[in-house]
Image (cartoon, rainbow, N blue to C red; front, top):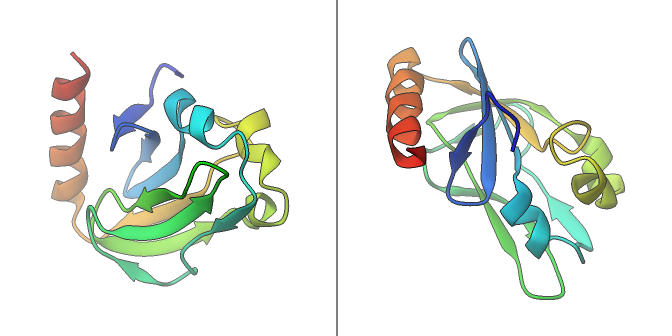
Length: 121
């Protein structure tokens, strides 16, 4: 996995930039998504809740649920992965990112970052 990324829910990666978190699938998630046929992502401007399902990737082995890491608003969705799900497998840490969420509370990002870094150790 890329150096500055955090692992979330076992198969998500997170990149924190100010109050915006970019979410994608890490290597573990990509293993399950190798047969992805459909990607459902949250809508831009949709409010999401921490640890709640906000999207799904359908695979031959069953769905991969996508979770929001914090309470916030979806500020951008990668429509390219909806149209061409293979991008998630081909470039999971680049063009295969899934969505960006702006946290409702900056403190939530700080707490999330600390908690996830402790879990990675």
